[in-house]
Structures are given as structure tokens and as C-alpha cells.
Image (cartoon, one colour):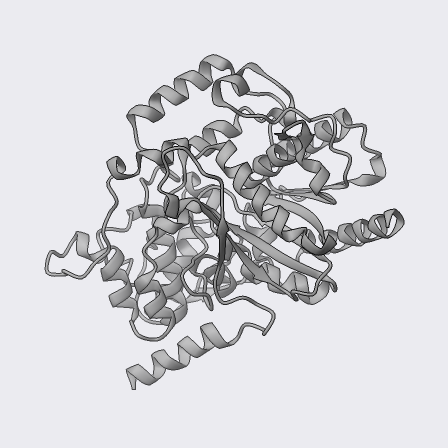
Length: 457
């Protein structure tokens, strides 16, 4: 009976995607980063939508996020935007992830307890011998070089592939992805600005601060990086554990939503993520990431999800009319329906975050010389811009977009600014359904891009 149930759930997770949706990431050759093993010099894309589309929306995830994060949103987008395909970027660092037990659980070959034990439970139970292996920092020292240059050069190859056959490309980024797309648009590719490859830019609660870090701050950050871990500690949680908590929690919430929470019963899950009453797997997951109960340090992982059910033992989850359905959110981070990928990045290169501080809306500065950042064409961004501000980025997102448009003398009609910082959490733009202000305005924006392309052709 248990095996039959898991098989049925696996079919739900894997078979529900439309025919136009990819089931896995497509990898292509990336930038030959100094010191990096050749097998890791690759960049991936998750393609969703018709291959015949004449327009491609390339989406860059933020800090500690992966391509699958965009999958539910992308499926909705391509269903409403005819002639468009989405390419969600899977950064090179995600090749280091061991997706084997996640894939087994998605296929109904492992249950929630086996999933948890493989990635986390073994840390408290030495009797578990088949388990995930941590990667020593000493084995991946080359990742200290995975900064903005490597990211932009990898992205350059993605965009070149997306443009084949004369397709138009709009480049979008969430959170840190906003800094990355500004870096790309203003990057100096042998005297040519990256924006020449693009038909538009979309900022999703992210962007580049017009003010750079100082050269001294940049040097200090590099010195600390050389003596520390190559990876960022997301929300203060060392790599890869933030990713493991989210990947196992989200998939566990889907494959066995109503069972007593495995995470809540474990000493491995931080106490500030646990409900005060017994909860289900779904209830535990929602409690840890909803705006009202999730700790402030995890603001970058939050959405408006609802609250614990008022009754039940254990307590389930009540969406309570909030923006983002909890199961859709779990799909974003688990990579439900996909093989070999989830929506988190277990290992996020700290160098990439350091370098983002020097992008400065594409204006040359002293920190760029220290860090090797070549985002210098900030006065040439002459494509339509759409910026959506949510709770984490707030007014800074709109300020950065205005500054970029102003210095490039972009006509006001080509700048779309939407402020929802009081009603949308950081991840609601990608998760909200069926009502989604970000998506509604994006559809209007791409119609403008379509008209501009028609006039120029």
C-alpha cells in the first residue's frame, strides 16, 4: 500500500507538467574559469515553453537559489504569453549537489524519512551509513574565483544560445540576480556592451546599488575570502545546510504533507523554525518560511503563505487567503517534476556576492579594479526596463532602476516601476497564484517589447 501511494505521488510530481516543460536541465560549455576542473566549466538552463518561440525570457536566480525556483512561474507565464519561452539559469556551483535521494523520492522510490535521513538524519544517528557526503572547503578552493566575471561569461554563453535563429531575449533577475543582469547589460565584452544582446531588462525585487563598495572594502572582503569558506552562509546557516533544510523540507511537504513533521521531531532543525505545537510536514514547512513566523534572518526565503491550522493533531496548514499557495512554494524549492535539480543552491559562491557590490549600475569605480569587474557601460542601457519592488529590496530596487534609466537617457515610457514592498514578500513575485501583480505587469511589459521589436524589424 505504501509503495502504491508513493508511486501515485511520484506520478503527480512528474507527470503533471505540460509537454512544453523540460524535465531536466540542459548543460552547455561555460567559461574556462582559472583553476576550475574542466568538467565544472558548464552552465545549465531549464527550458520551459515552446522551442519554436521567437522570444526568450532568460531568468537569473538570486542568492542560494537554482533554476527550478522559477519553474511554476515559468509554466504560468508561457501559458499566457504566446510566442515566449523561459530559460531559467542553473549556475555551475549546483553541479556539486548530490541529487540522488531527492530524485529517488520524486520517483516514489524513497519516503520522507529516508529522504531526511540521507541528507540530515545521519548527523545525529551514526547507525545511518548510506548518506550524503559533505565537501571539504579545501577540495573546492577554486570556487573562490567564481565571481561576477565567471557568472557574466557563463551567462553570455546562455544568451548567445538563446539568440540563435534571430530570437529576441529579455533578461530578468530575482534578488542578487538583479545585480547580475545589470552587470551583464553594462559589461564590457571587448568594447561592446552586453545590452546589445538584449531587448529588455526585468528586475524582480533586486538590482545594483548605484553606490559601490570602496576599494578598501573590496580588498578586505577578498582577504577574508581567501582565509575562509568559498561559500556564503545563507541566513547565517553554513553551506550546504540551508539548501538541505529547504530541499528536504519542501519535498517532504509534498510527498507526505499530512504526516507528523519529521523536521520538527529532529534536533537538527533550529528551534526558531519549529512551531510551538505538533505540526504536519506541510505545517512545519509553512511555519518556517511564512512572513509572520519565519525568523528575520531568513527574510530572503520568505513568502506570504498563511498560518498553521487552528485545529488538528498534528496541525496542518491554512493558506488563509494569502498570496502564495504553500504547495506551489514547495514545488519551487523542491524541483517537483524535475530530475537532478531543485530550487535551492546548496553552495553559493561568496565571491559572487562580494563582486556584486562593485557593479554600481555599470559605472566605473575603484572597487571594480580590485575585483576585476568590467561593468562600465552604464550609460548605454537603451532597452525597456521593468522593476518590481517587494519587501526585501523595497525602494532600493526602484532607485537603482531609475538611476540606470536616467544615466542611459532612457525615455520615461520605457521604464516600468511597480512598488509592492508593503504587500509582497521577497518570493511572492515568483510564487503568488492565481493573482499575481508582478506577472500581470510583466505581461503588459513584454507586449511593449513585442511592439518595439515589430517596429525595428
